[in-house]
Length: 251
Image 1 (cartoon, rainbow, N blue to C red):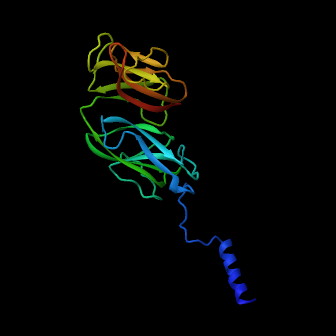
Image 2 (cartoon, rainbow, N blue to C red; image 1 turned 90 degrees about the horizontal axis):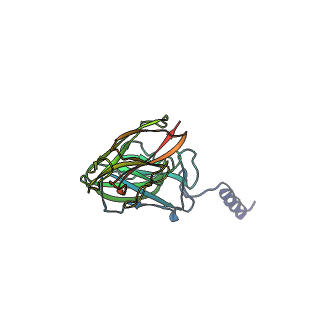
Image 3 (cartoon, rainbow, N blue to C red; image 1 turned 180 degrees about the vertical axis):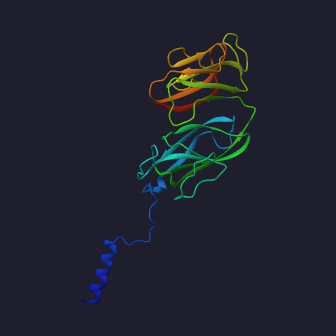
């Protein structure tokens, strides 16, 4: 074999074996990572919010799906609170500062202490391994702004009827009737989404009114996943801005 033949043979072997200087891909990493991104769509950077506030998240060129199998180009959202983003390839912790949206949610709510906070939005794969797609914003929590809280039994699943509690801060809870500024009564929407502030809350099987001023009840829900929205309506049932939406699974 000539010298040229030997060099050519070695080159062909290197190509066949995939010899490359490129680093190995992270689990779930997309092939064209340069076109992928994530971002907060709410709240905006620098916004002032109530202690409980909603967040909305979006991804470009990434599939958002529930945690579980590790799929190339897919994962679920996480929000880091005053903890910084997680280095790509590291497992995202699960604690008060690392909030997982493992059901594939693209929106949720946070409850923070008053003051300034740094939030990092990041996607991780089905095994919670961080991918290199992040967005960072700052928010200021104003402790004087009103908010509402819906309490449900802890755990991954609950039994029906579901005992729930309703609480408000900065809003006086009273019976329906007179319309007074800063006052109203509770409503829970079951699998129907929150009612826009300023709109009259319907009264039907989906929109439950607690016009007697009550702050606790039991919900008879069929098995499966349900989304509940708690909000206050004034004496004429017009929706006020504070809401608390959560997802629960009934066994």
